Length: 164
Image (cartoon, rainbow, N blue to C red; front, side, top):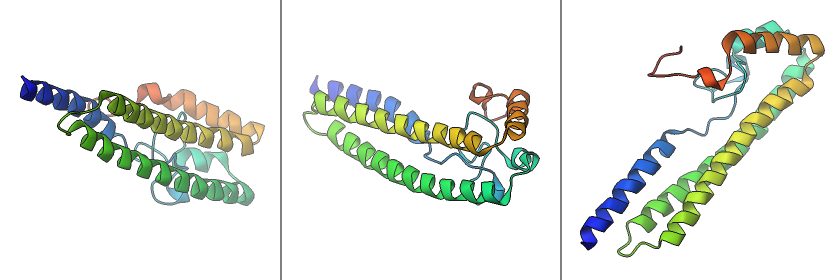
């Protein structure tokens, strides 16, 4: 009976942890013009499309580009720290779940901490969008809004490996 309970717990944890491990901690990008890991589907989810086409259409000034570069560097450092914390917690959670007598309170606490880090990562991505909009003039915001209407928001993300 003990083995069955242990296997059931491990199976449940695997079903919970595997989807979480598929989420990557990539920062919200500003397109390839701003370095590797830029905007678009591989640069991290954003609430608006900010790929190279959008950035080009915005006609950013040199000062705006420099502000975005500095912000992206700071945000990438933050995201790397959060991702590291997330990875360590996942290892600790797996270790706690595989003990002879797993402590469910510890497991629940670690699970909440993992969720909190995911929340912090999402907040960082949102802050990037807010920051980008804060340095745009009214005309640039209209262009960005038009792209958002054309390309949609996160609700229209990939399904089945293809953009729809």
